[in-house]
Image (tube, rainbow, N blue to C red; front, side, top):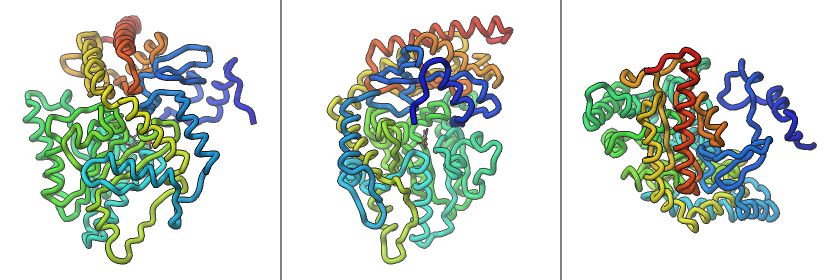
Length: 462
Ligand SMILES: Cc1ncc(COP(=O)(O)O)c(C=O)c1O
């Protein structure tokens, strides 16, 4: 078997004919032109035509240490030579797996010392909810099965995690609605007119309590939340939000799952953001993406000793979960090397140092046409575009505003993520100060070009 030639449109043609991409308009898929990426190095990726792009999205919020690390290639190759794969079932383990779970327990907050390894973020969030249900059954409270999630959340693409995600992800199929419920996103930009940040926080907390009471506290198992909502639009909650939500969980006996698939491994300047950034120690943290910096797939559910004590008490503690590739030796070796690099190169510290400049540079875009809001924190940022700045009105879907700006960025050598009316940025943590300037400058030019293009196309903006 040979790889398709990377010239002459062959990859594009094969891809259009056979490949089903994630989250794709299937009717348009065969027509959409592909950007074929053939190589990656450092903070850059390269197209088949030799074009070089700064990777503004870190692959998919995940390539935290940057691309093409020789020592990572070596660690992966060494592991394959030593032990490619062996089953994690039936009390079998490997040095890579045992070392990784120890490394995670050491870096996780509080007494989150128990780790269930999975194959990615979706399988981590899905497993976390299953663990919570198992926990309450073992606690003798089987009625506690309702899960409260939030609008604008994204927790994955298994049947359950897609149901946990914003209801918009469930269009066109039968989402789980019997035990999954959604409350408002803590979106400051779109909060009700006239409310201060502090007043908005009170509204959100009250809504959470009402939802718990409406379902009956004795029926609610857990709350699941990303510290900063990622795919839903990089929504940074009001000050104190997570502490208040955790306090509410404690008041009514719910467990708190913090989905750190994006926010972990340095993106916000810490291995985990829950405690270091938001002052909470949740019961469970889910992790993926930056955990292996995307070099190979991996996910983890990290739970507290307290939760584990209930799961493991007495007899009948058998829990049917796990995957063939739970704790895959190669993925664990990659994650260990990833942690080593993050610590040796002080990448968390670097994000804490350079993050404010990234925020500042992007916030300079606020006065530009089309830009409604620039938000985020450190290396997790987002620009929201609006048709009318005063009324914060969105463009019609078919304007594809995020994609238009994305196209203009690509022409200038920058990849950002187009998400409906948003562009999202989550670059490698190795991004330099010069590259921060480049990203801001390219976005500015791309936004001006797009505004001109909209005028030519007769699309009104105010
Ligand atoms: C917060 C969060 N949780 C879970 C997931 C799902 O992860 P995966 O795509 O690895 O299954 C994602 C993916 O973007 C995510 O952002």
